[in-house]
Structure formats: structure tokens, C-alpha cells
Length: 427
Ligand code: AFD
Ligand code: MN
Ligand code: MN
Image (cartoon, rainbow, N blue to C red; front, side, top):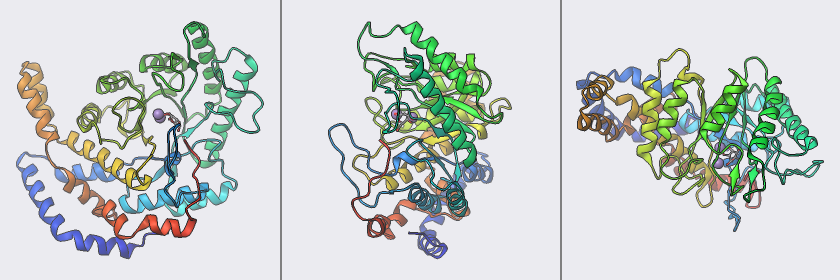
């Protein structure tokens, strides 16, 4: 299924009267605050958020999985789905692939298809958390940290292979997320596991093309429940600092223990020029992979507040940060969820752009705690949805992507095209 320009135009025409009213209202209000609305909208127009290839089908838990129908069965169909999202929001012009789930059979055809859909390839992801059918050694007891050198070599070679695929696709980064860890006290020698991991990462790092980055995730628990080799941002930061300039930390919002101050982590990584990118999602308890902004929208805003505060920093350019989603959909239509996630990210960004930084700095220096809170909440409580919609309309997208998605009965069409039995690769 494809969404035509006519369909977008007729949707926007129908929405235009209500939209103009809402937009004029907020534009007038912000104008009084001396905010440059044009530059704000331009910043929103330029901002892109990458869609993960593994989040286009139904996820599931270890208890079960409920199919949604019309899931993309091939990499080509995954690109089609991202193409649909991008056509509706013009903000999702990139996909992040997971190898070996997404190895292209025909590299040229896949690149051509991506070009047609105006989609680029963001970071490629390696997978050493599962055993593949044709794999010689098992990752049951770890991969890059394994006690057995043969297994570490296999895991390093896999990561290098992922880089090679990424080069052919035009990617510029590899994301490494390690499931390595231990389930019981005493099982693993922490220091040795860390050293082996560092040595393995060094070998992969040496294979990076000069204009590439290596992004290293962290996660406090799961699938290992006693210890993870890279449990927190500090450990990731230690590794990326040892590896070199091309290595940076990736912050997955779901990979923190409850109540962690993620915005402070973001601030510290920015200060050290080691913030490589994000995996956006939301959580209540752990790595719940819920829709971004659905549980803790204020936290998302506070994260963007740190990012915007640093937006003009020459050593850590905002445009170089990888903005990606990492989600899993157990009950929602993944495409609807991804549209909502992208919009929530845009809303948080727009609100952060509204923060009166001069006044905030003044309040901070004067230790005027109440005023500082007012400044922050004034921005957060502003309904910026008309600004985000305006940026979409200007870039040829839909005023209300989710509404259009439902009007066009996209899922029904995908089920008609692909059937109800297809299952997308991923978790
Ligand atoms: C994991 C990690 C990592 C990984 C993904 C796999 O966040 O990003 O690539 O999920 O689906 O939880
Ligand atoms: Mn992640
Ligand atoms: Mn995760």
C-alpha cells in the first residue's frame, strides 16, 4: 500500500480550518514572548527519528504473542511500512536494521527501494543474544565476555560482519547491546568479564570505517538477572572512553532502574561529548518498551531540555546524535504506536525549545527555586501540538497522521495484501 499526495492533500484540506485556528492562537501567544516561531518550526521540520526494523510486527512476552495481521514478512515489506510512516509524518526517514534478522538478499534492490521511499539506513545492530541455526558456538554463557576465546572470536566476527553489511547500506554506526551477564552470585568473575568484553570491543572498534561510530548500550538486568556486564551508563562510559573518539554511549530510556534521573545522565554525557544517541521508549517498571511519552512525558521533556540547552555546542552537534526508537508492541498496532511515539518525541522537543533559557539561568543563579520550576512548567504545559502539525504540513506530511492512518484503513489494507499469518522477525 502507498499513500498518495492527493490523499495527504485532501486530509490536510479537511483539517485546515481547525488547524489554522489552533496554530494562529499559539503563534500569537508565543510571539508575545518574543519567540521566533519560524525558526522553531524549521527545527521541527529538520528533526528526524529512526524507526527500528524489529518493532514493525507484534512483540510478545515469554507468556505469549498475539499476531496483529499484515505484518511485514520481508525486509522489503519492513521498508514499505517505514515508508508509510514517513509519508504520513515526514519525520521518520530512516530505519535501523538488526542483523541477522534483516540481512538483505539483494543489496542493490533494497537500496533502490529505500531511495524510492526516501529512507536512509541508520545504525546497524548486532545480535549476540540469540543463537542462530547455522551458528557454531552458543551464546548461552555470553558472547563478547565469554570465558572461551573461540566464542569471543565468533561474536567479534559477527559484529564485524554487521559493520560490512552496514557499509553496503550507507549506515554510519553500529549499535552494540550485550545480553552478557550472570544469573547467580559467584557465576562470573566481574573483573575478568569486563576485561574480556573490553578486549573484544577493541577488536570490533579497529574494524570501524573512519567516519563510523560505535554506540554502546547498557541495561541493568534482563536477560541476566543477577548481573549484566554493562549494567549502567557509567560502565558504558568507561568502555567508550577507553575505546576512543568513535565510541559513544547510547541511552535507551527503558534501560534504567525505576526513578533513575535520566536527564542528569544525558547532561553528563553531553558534557563529556559521549552522547551517541537514544533508543526512545517509555516504561513503568523496567524494559517495558512502551510508547514513548505514554507514562512519563515530563521526564521526556526534561531530557530534551538538557539537549536543547546544549543544541549549539560545536563539539557535540545536535544533528550528530542518533535519534532512534526501540519499542515492542504487544497489543497495539505497531504503526499506530510508532506514529504516536514520534509525535511524543516531537512534542517534547518543541516544548524544550520554548523554555525561556535566560530566565531559567537567572532563576538558577539567584537560587529562585520557585521561578525555575515555573519557567520549566510554563513550557511543559504549553500545548505545542499545532506547532508540530504545522511543521508536518509544511513538509508535505499529514496534519494528523494517526487520523489519516485510520481514515485510509491502512492495517486493513496491509492484511488484505499480506494476510493474517505473516510474522515479522524481531523480538
Ligand atoms: C534490547 C536492546 C537493544 C536490542 C533490542 C533487540 O534495547 O536495543 O537491539 O532490544 O530487539 O532490549
Ligand atoms: Mn535498545
Ligand atoms: Mn531494550
